[in-house]
Image 1 (tube, helix red, strand yellow):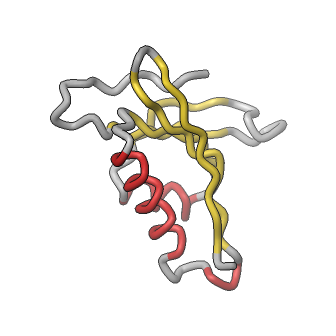
Image 2: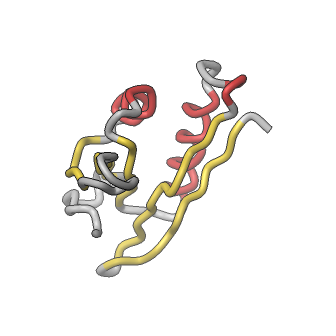
Length: 110
């Protein structure tokens, strides 16, 4: 197995929202486009069910993951201190998939 992703789907305020719980890539498979492909598939599935927004937490020190999310159009929406334990903060990223549907990006849930 090269990698996997876990995504939570729910409806908030009448709109479907996706939360990427994790994207994991085997160390031997990194820098081969596996994370990129997993993220594309997540977004494709989300668009198929008309998800308005995708959001996630990422370790603030995980530069490779942050570059991946930014390359896919995710925007920094906040930060949570000590999210991964003491002295390990998370950045919160989100992406609106509601383009053309008149929906504005909301703040990610706590």
